[in-house]
Image (cartoon, rainbow, N blue to C red):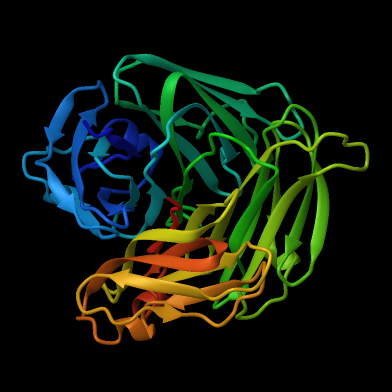
Length: 452
């Protein structure tokens, strides 16, 4: 018997948001779609998925379906017959290794996050807020086991090793999800960025959503990111911007070690900075203070080092927020390591006015080309970049990619990026053409490429 590979996809879906989802994310109703990509280079994957409600009840089981090698399948949740409006979590199971990406949106906001294939008992969230310059957060945490478990969230203030707030949900049913909202917590101060540790008595799968507060100038902005199940001494962030076609980024680093961390950030333009971060605390670095303005993409290497009184390098985690003045906004998590083959479950060319761009960083020791190979109707030969120096980035833009010159209108597919050197990649999905690009709404989604 083949071992099932399980992807846990945490999300809320409704034609009219009810219960915890309404409190967590103002606006709505939110609709969801998720994409499964087969990572096997030889064989077809046989898959199915199940929807569970908030009390652990199995609400829907799909028929089995096949995904060809390195190809993808889209599941548009509102199109599933017989699934009533409500709040759900999903378990997708395949007999081959697969990757999952979730997109969700309402009329003027959208975000993306990955499905979680490796649930764990402890997770770290670098940024949680209660009115941090008009942003607040919530966490949705799924029980990744079949039996009830307890889930606890510890929230830490900057420089404080003791949590300022502890939130607990007991007896969360198997495969169900629970929401922890930071909005309105008396212990959390305005304009302070907190960090969190999420712990389950069994394996869990969490997602953090960042949303603009209602009636504020950023009310339309919506971000979503996956916390980290472990820290590392080195991370890579391939997409750093200072007024890149109007976009800026901010890098957040969390110390998940047991003592103060000394962190060095080395940007691809040669700029470096070293900071100390207390245990359980986070540090935010706004990219326009670091790299030059203009239409150039940058990347950064984050390293936990010793020196200046720090005798042991501490594990850290990192993620990046990006936004522009018309309220496009999204998040992605940094990478602890690269690989020579990166999978992208969904890419677009004018798919309902959405285009994608794929930004990859060479995290190896020497220069190398990068080649993107598409799956989908009408695709041409793969596209190869020039030689990309170690530490530098390259962007593949699907609207002008010669591989997609002959694809039909409203095209969507999947892709694989390969290189002789290890690389990391992120994908931006955006309505980036007129008239939508000039409209104030958040139709930007970002997700991380997946290494097998």
